[in-house]
Length: 474
Ligand code: GLN
Image 1 (spheres, rainbow, N blue to C red):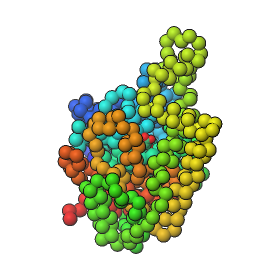
Image 2 (image 1 turned 135 degrees about the vertical axis):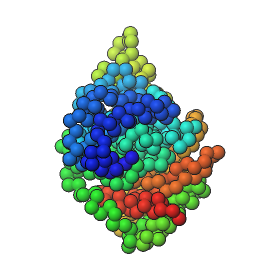
Image 3 (image 1 turned 180 degrees about the vertical axis):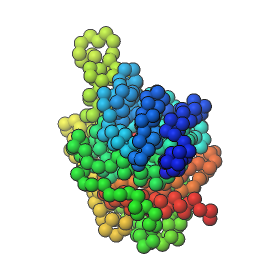
């Protein structure tokens, strides 16, 4: 059930927050073994919060599942890594958690993810495999794969994820749920374990667009504890949500419909765009000429920032500590060697390389310049259109284990989502129908809608129209 439906039932006295939690815990016990979305959950503490829930608040009594890189006081925060899975407990609430609680919600469940959010399949989790509820032989997408899979399977009402290069939108697309990456600065990152600080944002994964708006409303806003959060008041994301798309100009970027995109994805996305046109939107072809450089740019900047952020995992202050080191350098080396998985090591090596003297200008410096060009592409486009529509991922969910030895193939599949993070603009993925792919049947596909910086309200309005149109029988 969606948050809005549950809220009605709660207010009508037809259910209680405790009953909802007991029901979810039952679902997790019965079904999550097949899916593997939850790393753990703490029913007892959630029930204590439920007993005190204030139903008059906007999310009063609603449990929200939390990606395992967002700190919740007293709970584990493994980031899908062995480094933090042994003994780390969060000493504080992330700002988004504090805000969710202030809106009446109950954080419930720690969701599996690619280690330190590096990946697009959740297969890089060092802790467990998460499967796509639509086909358990396939990936849920990633890195917020646990969050997306639980919402799709019905074992969570809604969830928080994080998106550095697509990690909310792509798993939402693969699992057939809604996923919103807010503008950079819209939501506080305080208490989110940093991957690439100039790209990371927290956002909701939900069953409906309205639910995404409800959660964004609760978590958006200025936070003095995050120097990159913007001191700009958040508008009301629900007032215009049903206003439709009549007269809106929607840009279709040529570069997002080229070769390499699966025919089923293309068909579903094109039909979703046609449905928006039928509701009165103007469809305009546009160009984002630097798109082809997005993957290379992101895979320099994100690893560079990661190599710096992950320096704090040294065996001294956080998590895993190697036994019997010869000296302090050996302690650092062994702890990191034992604690990090292969993808994280690859990123740290890449990032250290592009930042090292002699290579800095050629790689990191150049990537920063191209990042500016990518941002300008969007600024130019938003002179002409209200929003941009595209696929989220080139294909529906692939099989588990495919491309296990081919990280480059995995990186290339991020082509449609990375640019929004590089430019700092918001993006949403909304389900746009099912498709067959690589032996799989009826796999979800997503429509991506990108908007100008801080343009979330309009994005939600368009996504709501797309959702309504795809729910209506043709
Ligand atoms: N797939 C991208 C990566 O591996 C994005 C991950 C994310 O958004 N956290 O870096």
